[in-house]
Length: 131
Image 1 (spheres, rainbow, N blue to C red):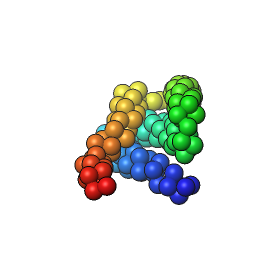
Image 2 (cartoon, rainbow, N blue to C red):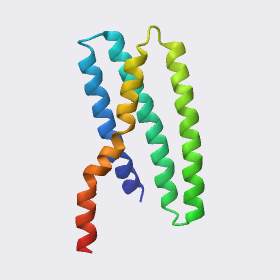
Image 3 (spheres, rainbow, N blue to C red):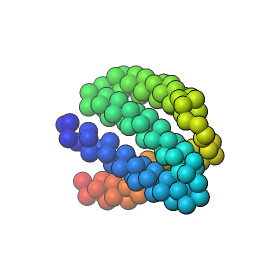
Image 4 (cartoon, one colour):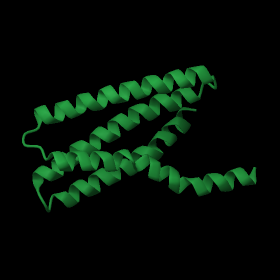
């Protein structure tokens, strides 16, 4: 079960990490500040998404709807608090910071799991039809 949980989480985290590194590397040619700001934004999205995924997928193993729902809500609340704290930390601790790069890459990386789901949907449909 733990290996399955890890695989499910990594299926979302790895594309986020790749996107963060690629965009940050490309921004080095524009500005070093934009590059490390983008890296920080991507890492905020990755850390918070990983936290959320671990909490939600762990609760799904219980097969109890009430536990799953409660876990989902708490994971989302914690994710919001963690995201806010990390943004505050970045703006306070990193000087100078390129806010546009930070936020743009954060949102780009944040929506990556949705794109991964859309790409995986045809595969899931085929698996469902076969069963």
